[in-house]
Image (tube, one colour):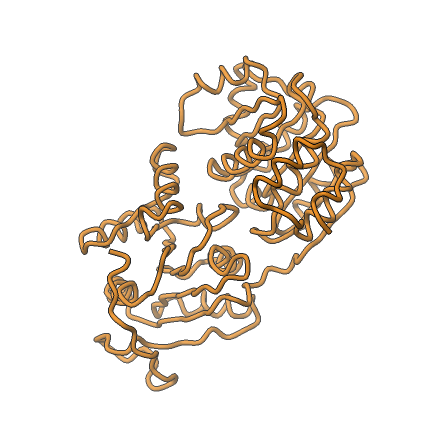
Length: 394
């Protein structure tokens, strides 16, 4: 099937062609015709499968031209809603439509101006949108299409009550509601039963699992030697872009600072940074100006970061699902990738939970030539092959 098989106006088809896309992904192929019919949809698919275009393309087709605020899309984080807004702009660049992007970390002035100029589409995080509703600078009375994106993440972040308040503010009868999520647990299903009318449920690869193109490695190591091992591994990676995940914001700052002190070019992204700093760090990483990005789980889901060759779990994730989301930043579009986990003794149970979740044992190994203070494997696994010393990340 080709995108040209969809009933999309020429302006949208032109934007799709300019983006270089020819064939839809499975979630796009199934969701776009249903959304064009005006049906409510529950769409579940893993991150990186094209969910944003699956709802953005038919929404733009249904809106057509500039008039009034008829579409609202909400998502859990600033980065995710900025990405959604960027997709709407890209696919709607030849249409007469106006957008407003609303999120925290920046001033209200430009957002109020975008709203007063007559935005057709609002893309927002729940908290900032509720602020505008309270200040009466935004109105949802005429919203015809409501999009709830990455709902499981909004559930994890405690936004479900805010989402319900926003849904209640969309008072127009006959509203079309589109709910997209990587997973649909019972709490989200209850929300869907309340907010959607006779939805069509579309499931694509709903079982979270790592991409087959990702090579997994676990390096058991004493907690006091984690950073030294990280440096040794980075010097051996033949990497273009390496994403390092830490559990806490302070930990991410500390690891980034230590790497910079050793001459690595490093960016950092977490929720304590202001929006300008987060946007710049992400842009520098995407553009290759900074080959290493240290992040918390704010960067583990939904962000479109191409060509990440290595993901390093500096801290073993506490939730097994987060392991899959983290390593999902590499091995995308059938490219090969490497997922490395540094595991201290007190993280053994967390690693076991991950292995149970992904239904496979992750190979444990040691780095040949690294001076361990104790043998992490006690002869239980062969040594990792020697790595050539490289400085490409410097």
